[in-house]
Image (cartoon, rainbow, N blue to C red; front, side, top):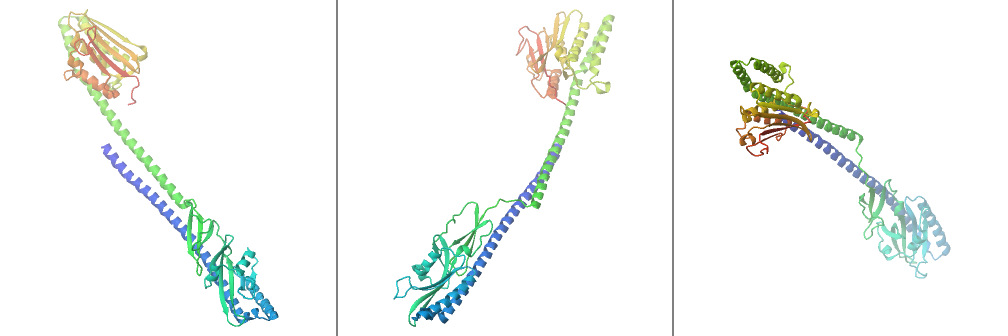
Length: 502
C-alpha cells in the first residue's frame, strides 16, 4: 500500500516539476526572443533615422545645386565672355554665390562650375570656379577630380548622386551638364561633392558602412560576433549598413526574480518529495521490522513447547523412581532455565528477542545440566566464553536448539557424552560452536533438507531475519558432507558483532 501511495505522490510531484521547468524555460526563451527582436527593431529604426537624415541632407544639397544651375543659366554666359573684364566680374559674382551656398551647405564639401573642354586652351586649364567647405578634406585631389574628371564621372551625368573614391575615401557627386550653343560654344558642368563620412554620424556602439555595386568597403567582412542591418538610400546607388557587436544576454530583473522563485520552488518540491519518500520508506521499514520481530517471537515460541512436555515427563519418571534429591536439584535448575526462557516476553519484563552471547551459552549449559541430573554420570559439559565477546547481543534460544539436538541425535544411554560449547572472536563475528562426540547428524539435516527439523529451520530463519545473511549457520557431522575427522557433530554459528540498528 505504501509503495502504491508513494508512486502516485512521486508521479504528481514529477508532473508538477516538469510543468514548472517547462514554464521557466518557456518564459526565458520567450523573453530572450522578445529582447533580441526589440534590439533588432531598435537597430533598424536607428538605421532608418540615419538614412532619413542622409536623404534630407542630399535633398538639401540637390536644391542648392539646382539654385546654382538656375543662377548660372541666368547670368553664367558672361563668365565665358571674350571680354575679359566682363568675364572676370561675372566670375566674381558667381563665386560669391557659390561661397554663400557652401557656407550654408548641409553636407557638401564643395560646389563647382567647370568648363575643361575649351579648344583654345590646354586640357585642364579651362575655367574652374570652385569653393570648398571649412570641413573639406583632400582639397588638392578634389580639384584634380574637377579639372580632369574620369570617364565614369562624365558618363554619370544624371539626377542621381554617384560614388567615387579618392585615397580610399568615398564621395558622392552630382553633376549637371549644360551645352551652350551661343558663342563661345562649350559644355559646362555644375556640380557638388559630398564626403560619405560627413553626412552621417556613427551611433554609439555601432559602425557604419556604405555598400554600392562593384565595391566592398574596407572592414565589411562579416564577423561572428556582429549583427548587420541594411537600408537603401534614396537617389543613390548606396546601401547604408550598420554593424553592431552582439551583446551578452542579461536577464531582466523581474524575470530574474521569477526564475529564482521558480528554481526555489523546484528545490522545495524536490526536497519535499525526498522527505515524503524517506518518511514512507521509514514507515514501511518499521512495519517490516515489526513483522520480523513478531515472526522472531513466533519462531522462538515454536522452539519451546516440546521442552515443557519433556520436563514434566522427566519429573514424573524421577518421582516414580523415588529420586527425591534429584527432583529437588532438577526443579532448581529448571527454574533457572525457565527464568531465562520466560524473560523473552515483554509482559514478563523481558528484553524482546535479543540476549547476549554469555547468557545464551549459560542457558544452553543450564539445559545440559538438566540432562546431567536426568542421566547422572553419563554427560560432561564444558562451556567457554571469551571475555571480549560475552556482551555481544544475539537472538535468544539459538544455542539451546543445538544443545537439544545433541540429545536427540548423539546421546546413547550408557555411553559417555562430552559436550563443549565455546564462543570466541573471529574477524568481525562471534563464532559459537557446539561440539559433541556422538554419532553425528544425518546427511539430510546437515545439507538443510526437508527433514532437517523445525528447530534448525527456525534458527536459520531467525538469523536471516535478524542479520540479513544466509550463511551464518554451518553444520558438520561424522556421517555426511563436511564430516569431522574426530567424529561427532559440530554446529557453528556466526554472529555479526555490528548489529543492525533495528
